[in-house]
Length: 118
Image 1: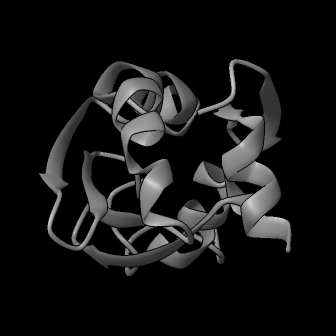
Image 2 (image 1 turned 180 degrees about the vertical axis):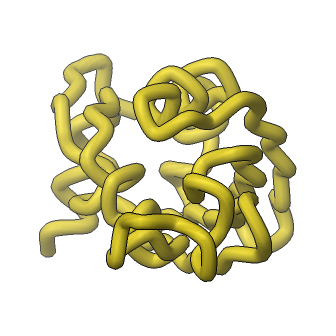
């Protein structure tokens, strides 16, 4: 594996699926290249995701590791301003938050990133 790394946005190397229930959002993060999974494990931590969503009121993040898929699943508490039905924000759904997660920067070995682009 290359020692050279690329700084990339998550959306360049992974996609996300999301849902919401009450005041909780559930976001799954799936790398396009399974070899990138370990990079996500190291860098997309509960603390980092909580820091990203704190401004939206998030109080807790639980990360579930799904190595056989490979994927990560994040359950984010208190991030939906009371829930979809009670929030004043019209665009307060899990789908929107998954796109926000995909804006995070990550370091990826250059050879893995280039293999995704080909």
